[in-house]
Image (cartoon, rainbow, N blue to C red; front, side, top):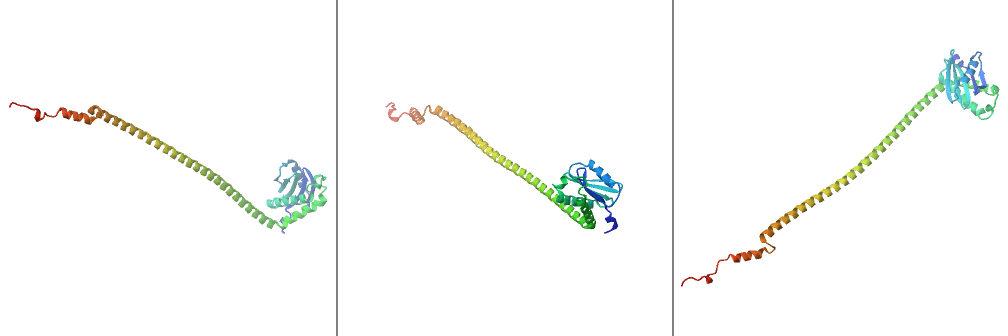
Length: 245
């Protein structure tokens, strides 16, 4: 382990609100006072915050009313500071969560948790390369997960679009069937109208022919009138003709 890495972390503490419960440092300076004053400015929401000051970074993790702080040199990669904060949070909640920490007095947990802060600092420094690889893997997994979720969302959107298209197709099919029914009704109606017109014309023609027939035959028995007219116009027989002797 290089000397530069061993001096990455300057100070660390755990606080409940603005009350520091446990801290650890091997250095002297005003960094502890600066970090404590930062507690008054931290938002209450669960999140991570970083402030830079005089060649150092003040890294905070706020979670469920507790603040975890690590003061590091600017040369320390940000991801190692974040990894240290996460380890402090997990270990502190495991040891004191929901119990002693809720009522502990300022710095009353120094004896129990101060050395733990030191151990976590040493562990992070010694395993910095492994942590960096792990973070890269997590980032890749997160990226793949994001891509998958995006693809799933797009697939769902396409599914909705396909569903809408299917509904529209069904509506068009129903409209086409209705149009076909209406067309069939119209064709039947037009056929009936044509048949009515043809029948009317035929009836008019029959009436006209009948009128002509009646005017020629002077009645219904056209044959009888023809015979009578033939008799009336027949020449006299030879027996009735008498001439001089």
